[in-house]
Image (cartoon, rainbow, N blue to C red; front, side, top):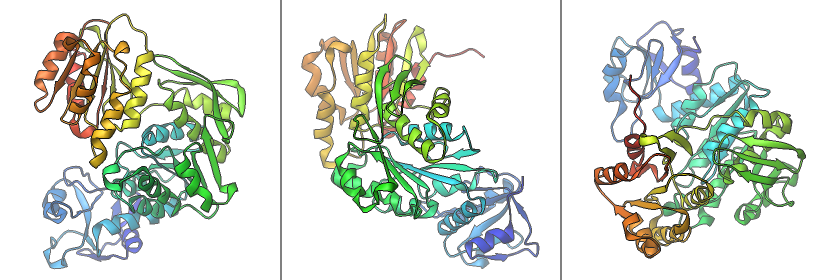
Length: 462
């Protein structure tokens, strides 16, 4: 389906069209990967480690109909339509901002050290009770991914839910001012990327950049029990702030929380008679659900309607995901990302699960903790209860700190530390795991523990 003409894109980006007299060429999609194009696509040659302009022939061969171009026009293919712009990334962002205003959906921006992806999924489920929705897919949550997400939304979208990630200061500022959210959500302040910010204070400052683009009547939703945020939200009028949490000081708080092996039940103060069931375990997921419910309230969705949608919501893959493992085991895959806070939370949850088999925990390095890495890994070690774990397998050089801290609490036959090649660890796990065992796998994405998950899955015959 045609979304734009070449002329519209050029006007949106202050670009100039070359090499075609037909300014009404239909463009249905965009891509910055020359291998992932189809007829009617606009190729965006980004300049990073490699110069995307070098792949223009590949883009044309794969069906591109036009391209942004920031190199001299003379270097462009002579018989291929281009839009000359000053900077291809800026043009992508300008184009996304123009399209967002043209479609004019309600905009929700979500950031936080942990929980932003789950909160995004829950918020999309809640808003789908009343609106046609579109949301960030996968990890497209940065200065490239967010405009790509916006440009991927259908014209009939009524509410868009945008995840906003960061690793440095000013990144959330760029995303917020591009998206101009009606509602901004901060899920929590943890230790993720503390290597780049030096402290949780620095992280809080960076997360608060989400209000930089907040509409003049927009609302900020945040965990009220986080003092670092409570201090900083004083810049906003009281009527533009909503809080969630566990105490009666918050606008929305949870009661009667019951965590089960595959689900979580709770009630809230604004609808105490209603039982809300999440199809995902972990008490910390209640916090994410509270944020989503508050977004729903801002957009006129009842708590009852939100509860019905939350009962059916789908988590993004690799987030606290139960998978059938080989040999009749069950894998709890949470290996997409990790911080000290999220690792401690999932360990606490795993300790509560009842099973007829063994409990096996596989933990990989938590990355981007900088000078605080050893201290924060030691903090994780303090959360490991030997009484609730049968086997503990640790992977990576940073996990050596955890191994040294906890090895005295375990039978030495039931604790192992590996680094480098994962094959010895996989071989050990495959010898150890038996029917009815449950296996938790948690790590930062950079350690690629997802590779281990794949090796431990039940293989289906085709």
